[in-house]
Image 1 (cartoon, rainbow over the protein chains, first blue to last red):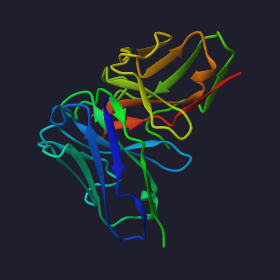
Image 2 (image 1 turned 180 degrees about the vertical axis):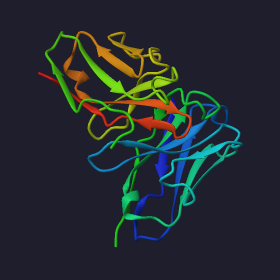
Image 3 (image 1 turned 135 degrees about the vertical axis):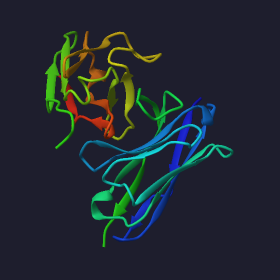
Amino acid sequence: EMKLLESGGGLVQPGESLRLSCAASGFTFNAYAMSWVRQTPGKGLEWVSGISGSAAGTYYADSVKGRFTIARDNSKSTLYLQMNSLRDDDTAVYYCAKGRDVVVVPDRGLDYWGQGILVTVSS
Amino acid sequence: QSALTQPASVSGSPGQSISISCTGTDSDVGGYRFVSWYQQHPGKAPKLMIYDVSVRPSGVSNRFSGSKSGNTASLTISGLQAEDEAVYYCTSYRSSDILVFGGGTKLTVL
Protein backbone atom coordinates (compact mmCIF):
# COMPACT_ATOMS: atom_id res chain seq x y z
CA GLU A 1 0.00 0.00 0.00
CA MET A 2 1.36 3.39 -0.99
CA LYS A 3 1.76 5.82 1.90
CA LEU A 4 2.98 9.39 2.23
CA LEU A 5 3.46 10.84 5.70
CA GLU A 6 4.31 14.50 6.18
CA SER A 7 6.01 15.88 9.27
CA GLY A 8 7.75 19.03 10.45
CA GLY A 9 4.89 21.50 10.44
CA GLY A 10 4.04 23.91 13.21
CA LEU A 11 3.82 27.54 14.28
CA VAL A 12 6.60 29.92 13.32
CA GLN A 13 7.02 33.67 13.21
CA PRO A 14 7.36 35.66 9.99
CA GLY A 15 10.89 35.51 8.65
CA GLU A 16 11.67 32.19 10.30
CA SER A 17 12.40 28.85 8.64
CA LEU A 18 10.85 25.40 8.69
CA ARG A 19 11.65 22.09 7.00
CA LEU A 20 8.91 19.70 5.99
CA SER A 21 9.56 16.01 5.40
CA CYS A 22 7.47 13.42 3.60
CA ALA A 23 8.25 9.76 4.18
CA ALA A 24 7.14 7.52 1.34
CA SER A 25 6.52 3.79 1.28
CA GLY A 26 4.86 1.18 -0.87
CA PHE A 27 6.34 2.22 -4.22
CA THR A 28 9.69 2.67 -5.95
CA PHE A 29 10.37 6.19 -4.76
CA ASN A 30 13.03 7.20 -7.29
CA ALA A 31 10.79 6.20 -10.21
CA TYR A 32 8.38 9.07 -9.65
CA ALA A 33 8.38 12.83 -9.47
CA MET A 34 7.09 14.35 -6.27
CA SER A 35 5.38 17.65 -5.55
CA TRP A 36 4.32 19.84 -2.67
CA VAL A 37 0.85 21.36 -2.88
CA ARG A 38 -0.63 23.69 -0.28
CA GLN A 39 -4.13 24.65 0.71
CA THR A 40 -4.94 27.78 2.63
CA PRO A 41 -7.63 27.39 5.28
CA GLY A 42 -11.03 27.35 3.66
CA LYS A 43 -9.59 28.09 0.26
CA GLY A 44 -8.22 26.32 -2.75
CA LEU A 45 -5.15 24.43 -3.75
CA GLU A 46 -1.84 25.83 -4.97
CA TRP A 47 1.04 23.84 -6.44
CA VAL A 48 4.23 24.89 -4.65
CA SER A 49 7.13 22.86 -5.97
CA GLY A 50 8.08 19.68 -7.77
CA ILE A 51 11.14 17.48 -8.20
CA SER A 52 11.91 14.76 -10.71
CA GLY A 53 12.62 11.19 -9.68
CA SER A 54 16.37 11.60 -10.05
CA ALA A 55 16.29 15.08 -8.45
CA ALA A 56 17.80 16.49 -11.63
CA GLY A 57 14.85 18.79 -12.20
CA THR A 58 13.33 21.11 -9.61
CA TYR A 59 10.50 23.54 -10.16
CA TYR A 60 8.85 26.25 -8.07
CA ALA A 61 5.79 28.44 -8.07
CA ASP A 62 6.63 32.13 -8.41
CA SER A 63 5.19 32.75 -4.95
CA VAL A 64 7.93 30.68 -3.27
CA LYS A 65 10.83 30.93 -5.72
CA GLY A 66 14.00 31.99 -3.95
CA ARG A 67 12.60 31.17 -0.50
CA PHE A 68 11.71 27.45 -0.67
CA THR A 69 13.95 24.56 -1.70
CA ILE A 70 12.70 21.12 -2.61
CA ALA A 71 14.94 18.08 -2.24
CA ARG A 72 14.70 14.32 -1.99
CA ASP A 73 16.79 11.52 -0.54
CA ASN A 74 16.01 8.47 -2.63
CA SER A 75 18.01 6.22 -0.29
CA LYS A 76 15.58 7.16 2.47
CA SER A 77 12.45 7.48 0.27
CA THR A 78 11.94 10.92 1.73
CA LEU A 79 10.93 14.24 0.21
CA TYR A 80 11.78 17.58 1.80
CA LEU A 81 10.71 21.19 1.57
CA GLN A 82 13.00 23.76 3.16
CA MET A 83 11.00 26.92 3.72
CA ASN A 84 12.90 30.12 4.53
CA SER A 85 11.78 33.71 5.02
CA LEU A 86 8.28 32.53 5.81
CA ARG A 87 5.44 35.01 5.43
CA ASP A 88 1.92 35.18 6.79
CA ASP A 89 0.53 34.10 3.44
CA ASP A 90 2.52 30.86 3.56
CA THR A 91 0.12 29.67 6.23
CA ALA A 92 -1.52 26.55 4.82
CA VAL A 93 -1.86 22.81 4.96
CA TYR A 94 1.01 21.38 2.96
CA TYR A 95 0.53 18.11 1.10
CA CYS A 96 3.19 15.99 -0.50
CA ALA A 97 1.96 14.21 -3.59
CA LYS A 98 3.31 11.56 -5.92
CA GLY A 99 3.41 12.21 -9.64
CA ARG A 100 2.43 9.61 -12.18
CA ASP A 101 5.68 10.05 -14.12
CA VAL A 102 9.38 10.30 -13.29
CA VAL A 103 9.42 13.87 -14.59
CA VAL A 104 7.57 16.85 -13.19
CA VAL A 105 6.97 18.45 -16.56
CA PRO A 106 4.43 18.11 -17.95
CA ASP A 107 2.19 17.31 -15.04
CA ARG A 108 0.02 14.25 -15.75
CA GLY A 109 -1.70 13.99 -12.41
CA LEU A 110 -0.77 13.50 -8.78
CA ASP A 111 -2.09 10.09 -7.87
CA TYR A 112 -1.24 9.72 -4.18
CA TRP A 113 -1.33 12.38 -1.50
CA GLY A 114 -0.29 12.53 2.13
CA GLN A 115 -2.71 13.58 4.82
CA GLY A 116 -1.26 17.07 4.95
CA ILE A 117 0.62 19.06 7.60
CA LEU A 118 -0.31 22.47 8.92
CA VAL A 119 2.16 25.32 8.75
CA THR A 120 1.13 28.51 10.57
CA VAL A 121 3.13 31.69 10.16
CA SER A 122 2.10 34.29 12.69
CA SER A 123 3.61 36.74 15.12
CA GLN B 1 -8.08 34.74 -8.29
CA SER B 2 -7.40 31.22 -9.51
CA ALA B 3 -5.67 30.54 -12.80
CA LEU B 4 -8.51 28.32 -14.04
CA THR B 5 -12.17 29.29 -13.71
CA GLN B 6 -14.69 26.88 -12.22
CA PRO B 7 -18.25 27.51 -11.04
CA ALA B 8 -18.38 27.93 -7.28
CA SER B 9 -21.12 25.37 -6.87
CA VAL B 10 -23.27 22.85 -8.69
CA SER B 11 -25.99 20.57 -7.45
CA GLY B 12 -27.98 17.59 -8.56
CA SER B 13 -30.31 14.91 -7.30
CA PRO B 14 -29.32 11.28 -6.82
CA GLY B 15 -29.26 9.45 -10.12
CA GLN B 16 -28.90 12.60 -12.20
CA SER B 17 -25.86 13.70 -14.19
CA ILE B 18 -23.96 16.92 -13.66
CA SER B 19 -21.03 18.60 -15.36
CA ILE B 20 -18.41 20.93 -13.95
CA SER B 21 -16.57 23.26 -16.30
CA CYS B 22 -12.98 24.44 -16.06
CA THR B 23 -12.02 27.36 -18.28
CA GLY B 24 -8.47 28.36 -19.01
CA THR B 25 -6.52 29.77 -21.91
CA ASP B 26 -4.53 28.70 -24.94
CA SER B 27 -1.51 28.53 -22.61
CA ASP B 28 -2.93 25.83 -20.40
CA VAL B 29 -6.21 23.95 -20.93
CA GLY B 30 -6.42 24.79 -24.61
CA GLY B 31 -2.80 24.10 -25.38
CA TYR B 32 -2.25 20.68 -23.85
CA ARG B 33 -4.03 17.46 -23.04
CA PHE B 34 -2.73 17.55 -19.47
CA VAL B 35 -5.90 18.34 -17.55
CA SER B 36 -6.64 16.52 -14.30
CA TRP B 37 -9.56 16.50 -11.91
CA TYR B 38 -9.47 15.94 -8.13
CA GLN B 39 -12.16 15.19 -5.58
CA GLN B 40 -11.74 16.44 -2.04
CA HIS B 41 -13.99 15.53 0.87
CA PRO B 42 -13.92 17.74 3.99
CA GLY B 43 -10.78 17.19 6.03
CA LYS B 44 -9.32 14.78 3.49
CA ALA B 45 -6.56 14.94 0.91
CA PRO B 46 -7.48 15.40 -2.74
CA LYS B 47 -8.02 12.26 -4.80
CA LEU B 48 -7.13 12.02 -8.48
CA MET B 49 -10.26 11.23 -10.51
CA ILE B 50 -9.22 12.02 -14.09
CA TYR B 51 -5.89 12.71 -15.79
CA ASP B 52 -4.86 13.50 -19.36
CA VAL B 53 -8.31 15.09 -19.92
CA SER B 54 -10.29 11.87 -19.94
CA VAL B 55 -8.38 8.95 -18.40
CA ARG B 56 -9.64 7.38 -15.18
CA PRO B 57 -7.08 5.95 -12.76
CA SER B 58 -7.59 2.39 -11.67
CA GLY B 59 -10.31 2.18 -9.04
CA VAL B 60 -12.21 5.30 -10.03
CA SER B 61 -15.83 4.69 -10.92
CA ASN B 62 -16.77 4.86 -14.59
CA ARG B 63 -19.50 7.29 -13.55
CA PHE B 64 -16.76 9.92 -13.76
CA SER B 65 -15.70 11.13 -17.19
CA GLY B 66 -13.69 14.02 -18.59
CA SER B 67 -13.58 15.92 -21.83
CA LYS B 68 -12.20 19.09 -23.36
CA SER B 69 -13.24 21.52 -26.05
CA GLY B 70 -11.03 24.45 -26.83
CA ASN B 71 -10.04 26.22 -23.61
CA THR B 72 -12.70 24.53 -21.49
CA ALA B 73 -12.46 21.14 -19.84
CA SER B 74 -15.39 19.38 -18.22
CA LEU B 75 -15.94 16.73 -15.60
CA THR B 76 -19.18 14.81 -15.85
CA ILE B 77 -20.56 12.66 -13.08
CA SER B 78 -23.42 10.39 -14.02
CA GLY B 79 -25.77 8.53 -11.68
CA LEU B 80 -25.07 10.94 -8.83
CA GLN B 81 -24.64 9.36 -5.42
CA ALA B 82 -24.55 10.91 -1.98
CA GLU B 83 -20.86 10.01 -1.64
CA ASP B 84 -20.05 12.21 -4.64
CA GLU B 85 -20.75 15.32 -2.56
CA ALA B 86 -17.35 17.01 -2.33
CA VAL B 87 -15.27 19.82 -3.78
CA TYR B 88 -13.83 19.19 -7.24
CA TYR B 89 -10.71 20.86 -8.57
CA CYS B 90 -9.35 20.94 -12.09
CA THR B 91 -5.69 21.39 -12.91
CA SER B 92 -3.76 21.97 -16.08
CA TYR B 93 -0.15 21.99 -17.09
CA ARG B 94 1.06 25.45 -18.09
CA SER B 95 4.61 25.77 -19.33
CA SER B 96 5.27 29.02 -17.44
CA ASP B 97 3.80 27.90 -14.13
CA ILE B 98 4.07 24.10 -14.35
CA LEU B 99 0.72 23.32 -12.71
CA VAL B 100 -2.28 25.59 -12.19
CA PHE B 101 -5.45 24.86 -10.26
CA GLY B 102 -9.03 25.95 -10.59
CA GLY B 103 -10.76 27.54 -7.63
CA GLY B 104 -12.83 24.46 -6.88
CA THR B 105 -16.51 23.59 -7.31
CA LYS B 106 -18.64 22.41 -4.43
CA LEU B 107 -20.97 19.64 -5.54
CA THR B 108 -24.12 19.25 -3.48
CA VAL B 109 -26.21 16.12 -3.87
CA LEU B 110 -29.76 17.19 -3.04
